[in-house]
Length: 299
Ligand code: HMG
Ligand code: MG
Image 1 (cartoon, rainbow, N blue to C red):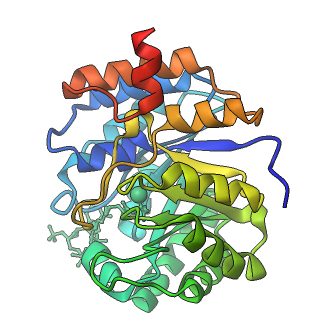
Image 2: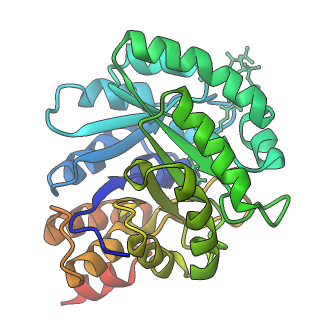
């Protein structure tokens, strides 16, 4: 097993982070956060989602956000789109890349997107069709890869099966979501032993929430397997409205600090990242949920 020499970070704070904040941010505040993030060297930013505003009101202004971003070059801004309606709205707002999101747990699928796993895959077919007509890249998420808030244990092979379906349908990459952050290094190994038997490591991303403080050590484990795409959120923002108690994604600052120390390239400037972290923390009125950010900001 060899560490990658370079890691691509997908910043999900503006979507995964802000979707779970009680305080809904204005489009202008989100645009400013994304502008600051865009200056850090990040090349991929998940900027919003086109879902039902009744389900996730915090994302209702994603169209204004995307309309303001579409002229920016060199950065891939993406949006969650659960169905055709979502994709149509994303295209209208100028999104060039989207993500569909499924789950390895039936109960979570019902609670999160109001349908079974197989129904969700059926819905995604229309998304893939329209996306390919518009040359839009589609990423796939699988939630609950190491545990479900409703069902508890999830078998690694259930994750592999859904991941395979998503790749087969046209996802260029599948992001494995430890939605409620219950995984440990052993669970991460069991998961990747199974998934990587079927899917090339270059198509796998790690999306770990830090609820139990395990995200960094699980990411280290994933790096040992050669995983080289990591999702994280500035200031450790995040959660999921349909997973009670789910806390933020692992903080981008903590991931970048660890990777810098391991001499794995990310292309991200820590000082500029801290500027984005401070901005959003001021807006939300609390310090970043990142040990590295708090330590570095005190210097
Ligand atoms: P539904 O109620 O089954 O859908 O919801 P429907 O097709 O029956 O439509 C019902 C209403 O929603 C209609 O409006 C539609 O127009 C509207 P009404 O006639 O009642 O006024 N609607 C929409 N509006 C805007 N955009 C759309 C859209 N689709 C339908 N795209 C649906 C199904 C999927 C829409 C709903 O369940 C939903 O929006 N869920 C949101 C779930 C969500 O955003 N969860 C958080 C993101 S996932 C996550 O955080 C996990 C992840 O981070 C990975 C991890 O950590 O594991 C990715
Ligand atoms: Mg998530």
